[in-house]
Length: 204
Image (tube, rainbow, N blue to C red; front, side):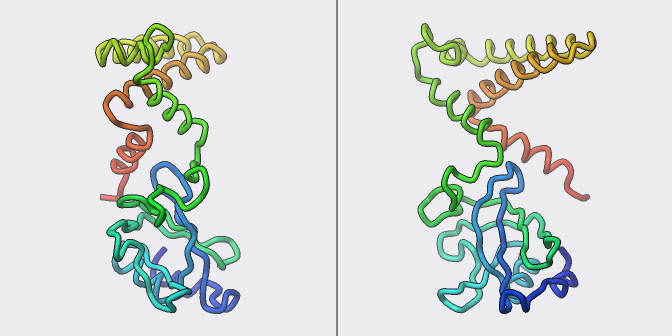
C-alpha cells in the first residue's frame, strides 16, 4: 500500500479513523484490531513498524513502544469499501498486553486444527513410549524421525506416480504428520517453515 493509497481511504465514514486488522504474515493468525488515522498509516509506511491512533490517549501510538513487542510491517491492503485496512506483520514477541500471541480467544489461529496437532505432538514428547506412538518417535531420536519422513516421502511420491489420488492424500497426510514431529524435535514449527518460504520470495 503506497502513500498515495492513503488518499483512497474513506476517512469520512469513520470520523477520520479506520479499523486495522493485524494478521501474522507467516501463519495467518489474526493478532489484533486497532484504529488508524492518516498520521498513523503514514508513520507505519515510513517506519516499517505498525502505528495506530490511540483512542484512549488521543494520540499516535506505535505498537510496542514501551514493551518492545513491535509489529514489523509486511504489507497493507485496503478493503473493497475503502473503510478498513488489512495489515500483515511479523510480531517481535507477544501481541496482546496479557502476554499471549493474539488478542483473540484461541490465539486467532488461521489453521486451528494443524496448530492443535502441533500442540498435541509437543504434549506427547514426555509421554510413555509404550503407549504413545509420538513419544516412541521422540524416544528413538532424530535419526528415526528423519527415517520416517524419508519413508513417507517415498510412499507419497510412489502414490503420485501411480495416479492414485486416495493413496496420495493418505500418504501425504502421513508425510506431513511425521514432518511435524521432526520439526518439533528441532524446536521448529510449521510457521517457521512458512516464514522461510516467505523470505525466499521477498523482492530483491
